[in-house]
Image (cartoon, rainbow, N blue to C red; front, side, top):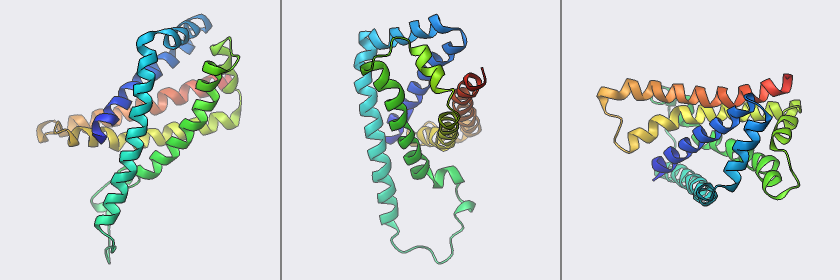
Length: 197
C-alpha cells in the first residue's frame, strides 16, 4: 500500500511539473492550464483522492518507521549501515518530514491563495513569489530533498510490488535516478529562472 500510494504521488508530480512548465510558454498558457485544473470536475474530485493519498502515504511512512525501530529495540554493538543501504534509504523518514513541511508552506502560498484568496492572475502570483530569494532557496532545497526521497522511493515501490526482477534491476534503478533528477531539477529550474528573469 505504501508503494502504490507512492506511485500515485509520482504520477501527480509529473502532472504538476507539466503544468508548471507552461510558465515558460507564457502568462496566457499558464493561466489557461491553471484555470483548467481549477475548474475541471474530474480534477476537482481527484484533489480529494490526492489529499487522501498524501495523508495515507505520510501515515504509512511514520507507521513503517516506528515498526522498523520497534523490531530492533537494542541497537547493534557495531553497525555499518552504509554497507547495506544508501543514505537516501536510511533517511526516508527525515526527507519525508522535511518535504511535508514544505508542502504545508506550498499549499499556503499557492493553493490557498488561488482557491480562496483574491488572486485573479495565477501567473503573477507564482512569478512574484519566485522573486523572493528566501522562498526560492527553500523551494530549491525542498525539491532537492524530494529528489533524494524519490531516488530510493521509486526503486523501493517497484520492489514492493514485485516488479523489480533481477533482469530489470539496473533499468529500474537507472529510471528511478533519472526520475528523481528530472523532478528535482525541473521544479528547481523554474524557480531559479523566474528569480533571475
